Amino acid sequence: MDYDVVIIGGGPAGGHCGRLLSEKGYRVLLVEQHSSWQDNNFSSAASPLEILEQFNLPETVVARFWKNIEIISTSIHRSWSSPQPLGVVFDFAKLREFLAAEVLRWGGEVRLGCRYLKYQQMEDKLTVFLKSQGEEIETVNTRLLVDATGYARAVMYKHRREKPNFLKAVGIEYLIAVPELDYQKYQDNLVFFLGHKWSPKGYGWIFPMDNQQLKIGAAWLEGEHPYISEVKPLKSYITQIMQTYMNLSNYDIIDSHGSILEYSLNLQDIYYQEPNIIAIGDAVSTVNFLGGEGIRHAMKGAEIACQYMEEYLQGKSRSFTAYQQRMQEYFQPKWNLSDRLSRKVYLEYSDARIDQGVSYLKYLSTQDIIDILFYYKFEKYTKGLGGFLLGKLRQWWRKIFPSQKPE
Image (cartoon, rainbow, N blue to C red):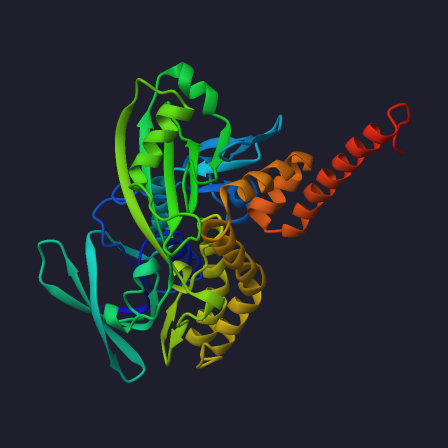
């Protein structure tokens, strides 16, 4: 079979890329190694509300809308609320299934349970070797090959030993079912945990799903920490959240899964290989390393990539140098700041300093918190610090001049 584009990986980046290109009339093959979209259903997938309109996504892929945010450190608890929904938690399986169905709707093909093996360059085309479950190895020809395999980067690096040193994080997440009264406490909330008590060298979370289910997880960065010599297994911190913070005594673990994130500092990934291989999504570090949000950015990166893939397919360009430049222009400024902050907070700060940082957040509005968490407007944090200093000044004034009010 001959295709215009073969996409390896059916995550948000690969699925959205296939959707966009098949809609334009290109012959697309989307290859997913898992035999069901329910397999490897690992992403917590919390995003701001605008993502539905931005990428034309139906509410059927949403597990739960959220309208409140809590941030909890070892000694400090801050919360913000809204009368209206502020964002969504996706059902990751339904999201990927929807995107694949869109590929089919526009005339593309989707192969589930199909593993990518290798490629061979054949003049201006590539021969791609695939292996479906229980089938013989088959080959397909394509004008473009897309690596959407996430941190595996399976197309760009033929062997693991070829990979450079990435900044690495590891996470584990439980999907649990809880009684109705317990579910009601968290059904509208995103809850984040910071500090050495809850998740040293990283953070933890509680995200609501549907059907009285919650996702509870913890993740950390790999690396040395000046204040932390030993850590417990990640699962023990999830158990601590459930037992110590949530006081859960009755719950069922429906699923548990782990994942790895490998991020290229300063976004120095391999974005393409001449003449006709291109990487998208987490394969080029579109995930934000500070908070781990990836779906929205993977889909945006896929949109950027599709512009340059179309130029190639139409014969207007023979190089993807402009694609790499555009991606780095779009992501690099905020991503570089985010990864520096993540290494400072997770691998350098004392527990007391994390508490202090969370305490400053009390002076920020709900919109300020949204802007920091999802739009990386870190300058908003100085507003919280300013409020803290102003509060201290007022305390000092009242002590010196108890009968006068500060201006």
